[in-house]
Amino acid sequence: MKWIFPLCLVALFGSSIARSEDKTLESVIKARKAEFRAKASPEKLAAYGEGIEAVRKARIVETALSKGAKAPDFTLPSATGAKVTLAEELDKGPVVLTWYRGGWCPYCNIQLAAYQEILPQIEELGAQLIAISPEVPDQSLTTREKNELRFTVLSDQNLKVSGQYGLVFELPPEVEKLYAEFFDIKEYNGEDAASNQLPLAATYVIDAKGKIAWSFLDADYTKRAEPRDIIEALDELE
Image 1 (cartoon, rainbow, N blue to C red):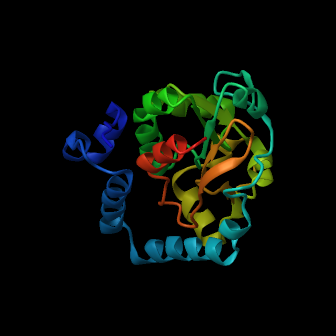
Image 2 (cartoon, helix red, strand yellow; image 1 turned 90 degrees about the vertical axis):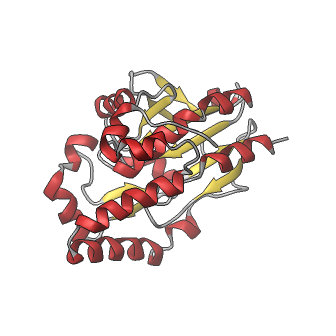
């Protein structure tokens, strides 16, 4: 699978990474993690590690909706303010539904850029790509424009739909405090948003009948569904 970063990510991660034509999403994320570990304090690394372990212990991955389940219908506003209903989109064909934490998350921006590059393949297979985050529409629009995204980006304020899919988890106090040091989550998610709740970075392939045909769930926020796996899942739909 070949894909290229938009300019914002080239600047962030370096041209040597961006120019490589055969990088998997996992390998680029690993490079970003290595860069972070080289600069972060042991205390910060320990806190983030404990945060991942807390999600594992909460068994969110085991209880969230996964392959074989019926995808709950919903209506959410897009980055441009339009109302998007899952059932209406499924009338057009399968949907790749992916969650990201927010435009403040570097791993999310890497993921979104990678998915933008496979958008033509997704569409060739008769499907469409929809991304969801807890960001308010204005922030979702910023994320969409920053990453030059040409797929639908939806705003799930207060994580109502994320909760229906069982994807919501709570940040440990140490991680919430670390995040607050470099950004205000309420600025992204709205004043009424909980500052300690986020969704898993889950990805689903939903068939035209509304059944989850393939799912990716991981307690580790740096793990994301590989583009080639999404295409393979779509290709296997009946």
